[in-house]
Image (cartoon, rainbow, N blue to C red):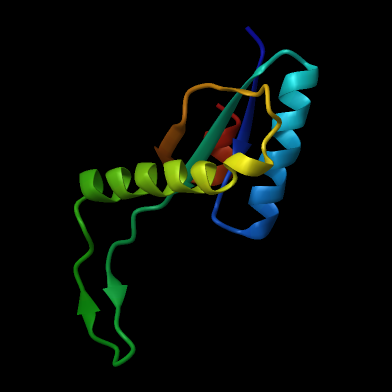
Length: 101
């Protein structure tokens, strides 16, 4: 089965890429597989410069999965009507590396 993977980051450009890829997937009889890649921060800094711990990796991964599902849901009305949504991919790492795997 042919598949088309499209990376999302919450921007309007990535939403447009998802919509475009949905039409391409229908024309190519392929599954559309949205993906979101995130990086684990060592620590976060507040506006006052205080370092605060981040969430555990498992919670950040779950939050990324929720974000990805929401992005796809919010674009649903714009996707090609007959598009087949396949696996939603969530990975920790560098976007270029993960999207090329």
